[in-house]
Image (tube, rainbow, N blue to C red; front, side, top):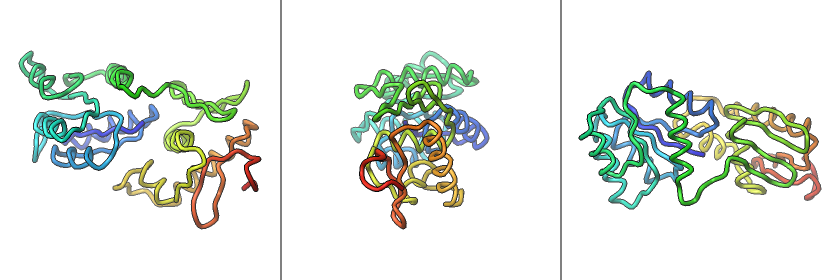
Length: 229
């Protein structure tokens, strides 16, 4: 699942982004309200976590603009403003939940999970394709009685492939979707993570494989669907 996180405190942004990614989410981090609106317009996010006090546009202004534009992505306001009237203002602006700072990391994760469960297009905690299951709660890939743990970018890559089986992704598309448009990582991190995932799938003895399309990209395929990679 992909989240938009808007927070102008760079240290807090980095810490929360790392927390969310450790829990298997794809995260785009932005640092002002205007940027948050722009990203929300250009990408189909599953959820938004947004600070109130930000430059350019504050969180309330940004959220109201999103709602006026028809963007109904669920949103949690995350802010130091915790008076009752502030909570009312945030919820009236279109927020689905409101969590004051300082906050507990476990509570934030629980609120995000609850927010995502309330979506009309609820996405289950497991993905199934052929004989392969990806458990989002435990970050495990399972085939029959066997399982392997996948975390971080490997988990996010596997989630993307299992949500889009037999779809060909170029290396640049994978870089953009998993590492983000503004990622500073080198493109070879895609190859490294794909190689590790292919080894894990081989260990599971699943019929699923990540097929290499030379010079083109990668796709999740069934082993007997044509020539194996």
